[in-house]
Each structure stands twice: as structure tokens, then as C-alpha cells.
Amino acid sequence: MNTIIISGIIKIIIVNCASLIASKIIEIKSGNKIQELLYAYKKKKNNKLLNLLLMGIYFLPYIGTITLALNLLLYSITVAYCIANNNFLSDLNIKKNISYNMPAERLEKLQKGNEEYKNIIDSLKIEGLNEKEIKEFISDAKKEDPYLNNNETLINECSQRKTNIELLKEIKDYLINSYGAYKYTLNKKIESIDIDGDTATIGVSKFDPKNPETTNNKIYTKKFKLK
Image (cartoon, rainbow, N blue to C red; front, side, top):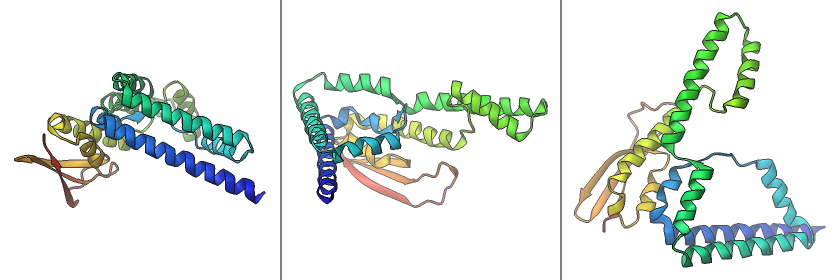
């Protein structure tokens, strides 16, 4: 029994290491052309229970080994395809459109859902429904529109991402490591971008979407080389 558990843990460590290595290679090869994907939102959230069940496969004799081998083969093919195929970035852009929402697109949906949510709540209160009835109505309505909710915090977060992207677009083509700049500013507020010779200094502060108007945050800076 102990041997099976240890073997399963080793397989999980191997597959996770392979995934990280493959991601790093793709980042080095293509990062400067897919940097905005860092700011994108997945349309579907990861199912944690499903992920745990899938990890459980690695504890099964033979099946776990075959699954590990297949995953390693998949990562190898993906990396090789990335290195050898000039259309790899186009394929990633297709994936982005299918699997991700960019901040501007998501922000529009969040704002619309937020407005409709408030209108529905006000209408139901006027009709005399109690709190329980209102919650049941909203729960059913969300099945049709998952963005129907009080989205204020998400709107603040998404709006800041949109603003950051707009600021970074002004300099991304001149940065040697634009991917690094997007990664550094993710989930932060860009306070300044200063150009001095061959260096861009980006100043950021911590961003709290629950309190977006906070102005006393410490500003951190990082330098990025220009082409």
C-alpha cells in the first residue's frame, strides 16, 4: 500500500514538473507575443473536485504509469510544436478567443449583469417578495446569465486590468521583455511609466478591488530594458 502511495506521489511530482518546464519553454519562445493572455480570464473555472479525481489516477497501478507517459508525450509534442511551428501563436489566439475573456469584454458583461441585477432586485421588492423569494428568483435567473450578480468588486478588478493593458500597449513593442512587464503588473495598479534612455521604469501599487480608491499604498518600481 505504501509503495502505491509513494509511486503515485512521485508521478504527480513528475507531471507537475514537466508542466512547469513546458510552460517556461513556451514563455521563453512566445511570451512577448502572448503577454496579454496573462490578463485574460478563463471562461470556465477549474473544477477542483475533478482535478482531485484526475490526480487519483496516478495512484492506480499501470493506468497511472500509462497516464503519466501520455502526459509527458503531450507536453513534449506541445513544446516541439511551439519551437518548430510559426503558426503556434495563431493557434494560441484561437484558444484565447474560445477559452478566455479579455478584460474589456468581461468588463462589459459584468457591468450589464450588475445593472440588471439591481433592476431585478428593485422590481421584486416593489412586488412585495421577501428576501428568500428574491434569492430563489435570482438563483434561477443566474442559470441563464451567470453574470447576473452584485459585481462591484469584480468590475473594479477588471476595470483596473483594462486600464493596465491600455497603458502597457503604449510601450510593449519597445520592451525587450514585454511578457515580464505584463506579469509584473498583473493584479496591481500601474501608477507610472517613465522612459529614460534605454530603460522603462514601471511603478505599481497594490490594488484592492474592494477598496479601489485607496491612495496611500506604497509604490514599487521595476526597470525593463528597451530595444
